[in-house]
Length: 368
Image 1 (cartoon, rainbow, N blue to C red):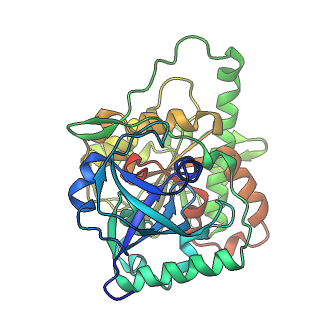
Image 2 (image 1 turned 45 degrees about the vertical axis):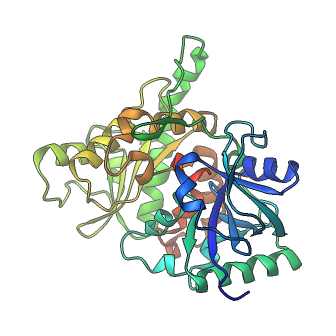
């Protein structure tokens, strides 16, 4: 269709299912998107993308002018700014098209910066896309609908995220109190799990050919028969030229991967019951060095996934520039263990961007 525009339409696995269950006839957005929505015309296409799993899941054709309505479609939010749509193609999360498989076809991957720079193009919808990019996505989704390929997904990535609350600084969460009902045995087991994950990340980075760093106060630890200090790739000092406060913060991050003088990735392992010290460390780093372009990862048990997301999006962290949720991604303990089991025979050939598929964005703005 001549003059057709293409717009990003973000869903979670849950809101996509709710959209379909309601008949798949109306797509909605937050009130803050009203001015953008008014630019969308009948005949335009929505490129439907599921956050958390980073896959294209469908195509919608706009069939009406924008309107406001609060009729119930989605459980947790009303998304009152709406347009009527017609489903052109729909996939399941398992048959969705991984965005990384289109790396060579989409201009969003040509942005200079870190391996995760492309994620900045998926932080709000509707967003107008270049015609060539839109046409490439349409082609890929239609092909997937005709010849679906099943790619298993970690079930945790399909769950709800914490409910977003609108404030003058943007979307935030207000986590509930932990209370005192946490199982006592959980606290006893956590240090061992933390040490295991720390070792796995150190060994993985080393096997990939990087130098590695472990938090200065953890250098004496060991996992089983493996002493951290005996790992050949472990560095004894960091070649960083920041102020003392930044250096001291970086030295206490659980695990770093380094390529010469550059930090390739930073990992904080969150396994404590109530104190997210790693989140504070990451926040301090972002506050002191807002232009530091380092992929940051929060690694935590699957059962604490929602808690991590809620904490990352607290008002305190949302006031940072950039917001902590924009710079950090989540990896579950189980996902890490499972992936390491699958790549052990060719780990030395891996590149850092494999962490993108393994991890999950924490940014609430990605849920439309």
